[in-house]
Length: 233
Ligand SMILES: [Fe+2]
Image (tube, rainbow, N blue to C red):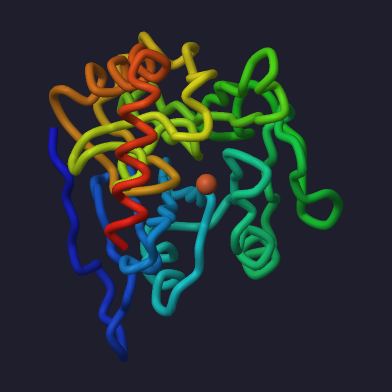
């Protein structure tokens, strides 16, 4: 399991600030502001020349990188408050903003289109994985691309320092009491979280399963990790 990054494929007239990571034939992830504590990450995926952009944060030059993949077909949210710059992207490319049906507090109207099961005309499956019981107010939807065993999460699983130690996958400190057990047995080989860089290769599915299965038992350790991460800013 490793994290990768590259400087981008497009020649830019000025330095691009985004950290591009996990690039492969099916797309890439990017962190628009690498020095930001939250380490917000976004993903662009391409299939048959059509591009889907997930939880996008704009930064100078990232639009050219995305356009180099193909024709933008849609923007997708994994959770309501990851709208980030999603409406801006949807309006700029005049494409739908796809919002999984279980999401709460998501944009309404304009380019917003509610979807369930699968993103239209794409290989991307929607896996609702929100909180249960007292945590039902938190709703998220993971995105699964079976061909590449590629999983995109919003907040439930991440690799930023306040989720987990470096290079590891962890459950969000706020949602450890209700981890995404529906993702437990997925054979993930590429994970693109909404916070932190992607992780790729052997060991990712095990890291995902461990993060989910130990989220509750490691609750205190997880909170200590998050606290130390905040202190170390
Ligand atoms: Fe988030």
